[in-house]
Image (cartoon, rainbow, N blue to C red):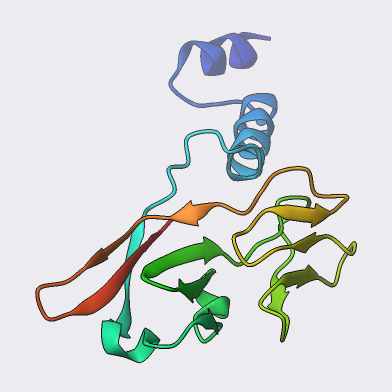
Length: 137
């Protein structure tokens, strides 16, 4: 018993404390505790590369689509708002989720669920060199 009392008074952690800390460390990233998502600024190339109306999906794997409609150039999230599955751009400029069948119009508005929220529009800016920069979190 003297040994246990001596160890408890020291800076050493017992097995129970270790297991609790280890479980918290493993659970924290999954729960979003103490994890800050870093924003990334992606150079999507020259603005002249988006001269025609349409959906440009070459940055889908980096999390966004670029859409040109008239003078308007926007970036929309490539992830379904239902369960974060990656969307597919359709020939009619809409977006389709293979996971659960949600669909979105070319402006990112939900046209069929189960998704209930529209796609997020991502912040864009033009660089001094005339490139489209997209901020992705």
